[in-house]
Length: 149
Image 1: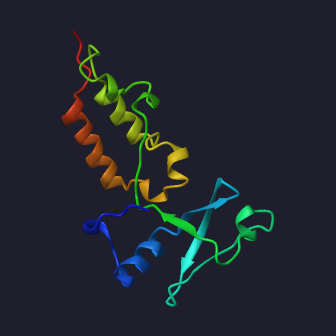
Image 2: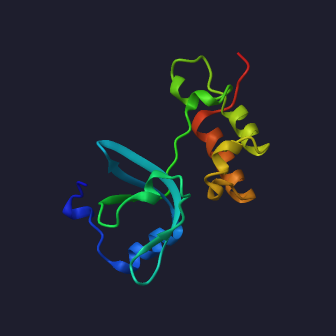
Image 3: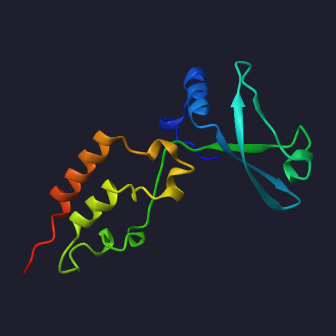
């Protein structure tokens, strides 16, 4: 895997902490010319080895110990298409006659944002009351309120 020197992390403590905070890994390997991918929770113990559990039927459970595999641990990241929101489409900024910042604020305050399907894999995305209040304020400051023409 390409990893520029400036971004390589070799500090074992940092690696252990990152995996502890982001244990849901993507395991990849090559099998008879085909790329195999499995998502699974992984632990990294002090001995530096990775531990997890696979079903016997999973192709990765039958890989020879000497076969090269790659584990990918993603940190926090997110993308929600602006077209998901009926009332607040940031991708249309400047193309619409109005941008409904007040309606986006309302969706946020009513608990409709972030959407449930985003919070399930990213529970840290659930906002506190103070975070919700601050974000709602910033929606209005950035996108404005609907004004009667």
